[in-house]
Amino acid sequence: MNEPCGFGTVTPKITEELALILGAGSVSSDGEKIAAYSHDEVAERFWDHPYRAEVLVFPESTEQVAAILRLANERRIPVTPRGAGTGLSGGAVPACGGILLSLERMNRILDVDTDNLCMTVEPGVITAEITRAARKAGLLYAGDPCSGDASFIGGNVAENAGGNKVIKYGPTGSSVMALEVVLADGSVTWFGGKRRKDVTGYDFVHLMVGSEGTLGVITKIVLKLLPLPAFGVDLLIPFPTVESAIRFVPRIALEGRVVPAAIELVDHHSLSQAEKFLNTRLPFDQAAAHLIVQLEGNDREVVADETERVGKLALEKDALEVFVADNRSSRDKLWKARKSVAEAIMAYYKNYAKEDIVVPTDKVPELLFSVDALCRKWDLEAANYGHVGDGNIHVNLLMADDRPHWHEEMEKVRTELYATVKELGGTLSGEHGIGLKRKAYLPQFLDKAQLELMQRVKLAFDPKGILNPGKLVFWDKNGEGHEA
Ligand code: MLT
Ligand code: ZN
Image (cartoon, rainbow, N blue to C red; front, side, top):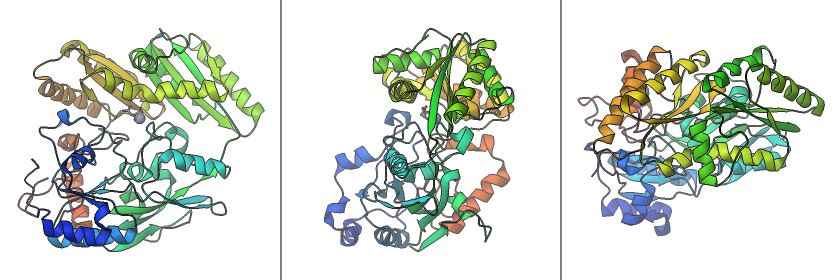
């Protein structure tokens, strides 16, 4: 059952028309296949009811995407773009049925332009392939989401994925120079270009970034590349308390005079889940928290000097030890553990709130104190980890037991958590997006003026509301005739 959104339905005639555009092999009405594609990493038990697309399509070119949108716009059929399904907010869930547009066959790297230091790709390229292609050319693609081995770059752009290197290089959007976009009516346009500066009109590139498929379908992406740092090390630093770990973070820049590529926090509960999941052990794994600090540069001596400085400073500030991972296998082991935390938690717990909160970095300790208080009040466990250098903590509130009304209870816990986050000057999502999962809470963080402005932007781009309906934007019931 889908939301009553007042859209047209996908009739057999429309399926036939889609097959004419794409070829019969690229259109599926198979119920099982549609079910498999109709969700992301958010388990279906988190929704009131399962959402299902009516038809699944696999375009291979911009022209095909344009033809699909022309048809959908004419008949007012919803279109939900979908990448690899690694999202954590239900952004690719077809909330109003209609056409589920998988971009997995648009998966080519079109050029690696070493003169302009950029790469042009289709949205279905796996993020890690982009990293590898850049590295092969001696260059760095700086996006590094934890799901990079599976996620598609199109999804990274649509959600403005962050990941581990934001502190130095910014989120995905900082690497996006240009986008080819199919608009709701099927017209095709380019925003931006292979240029480093551009104030010729509104910055549509960065309006598209993070717009969760609600404004257009991205069909090509030009990504900025950088020189590849020649040397890198990762410091694994255990601390006796989570607070001491967090308090050390600003010292790295202030007293250490270093801008690391990454500063990640993994608390004890998070680390133990990842260790169990991977059947591995990291040093000092009984410590309350670990920081992972990544340093990189082109001069071996400079990197060694920074490593020593940060290490010495950490020991002065209560660190229990400093482990330096400076070869491929030790670095990989460490990052594998860090990147597995989310999957491990989802494997071992059934009922949880998996959050993506951001607060000003100096408020992280307060945030975590209030998480402790919530856990005591509601009898929950917590696993807190993530991009502490950005103030973006993945607070995971976990129910060890199976409670009959766990969902309602979790909603209350989230409401209380968000009230604190708001008070601390924080916000709802740093990198996972709003999607279906957080939409009800948007008005807690955006005022009426902003919500209305978002509606008007949406209307300007997509007057019939066909693009990923149900996400991000609230529709006026009396306006376009459907409620998202
Ligand atoms: C991460 O940082 O591990 C990812 O954003 C996934 C998550 O923790 O929820
Ligand atoms: Zn993250």
